[in-house]
Image 1 (tube, one colour):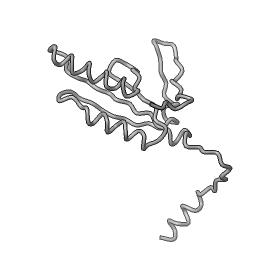
Image 2: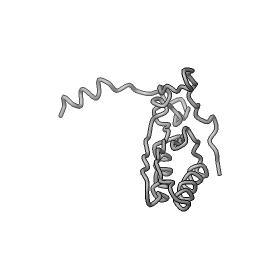
Image 3: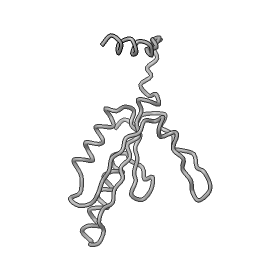
Image 4: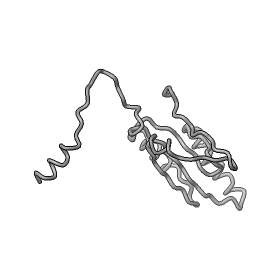
Amino acid sequence: MSVMLEEQEKFYIPRMHDGFDDRLNQYRSMWLFVYFDLPTETRKERKVASDFRKMLIKDGFTMFQFSIYLRFCPSMENTEVHARRIRKNLPEHGKICLMKFTDRQFGMMEVFFGQKAQLNEKPPQQLEIF
């Protein structure tokens, strides 16, 4: 037990608290991705898929690709709030996947349109208050 404690102490770096609140750093901030594949054979299925997309947009998600939406969240707690909202509104049929990335991981993503590289979306500078 003490060996494990010594290992942890070796990597501990004390932080200076100068009053700056760093809650929006690259390791605490999250991006929530919603991947989905919903059936669209019938008129009713198309309406369900459309309503699901509209719910995502109303909740602040942005379309990344046709069936991939993403949203910046300032913390893991906020990410869970939006994930719970999606779980509560899941369609009866289809496949939905939620993935969470830190802002740091998101920043390492490579995006291309054809052979041209594109810059990654930046997190919002100001939080929206509703």
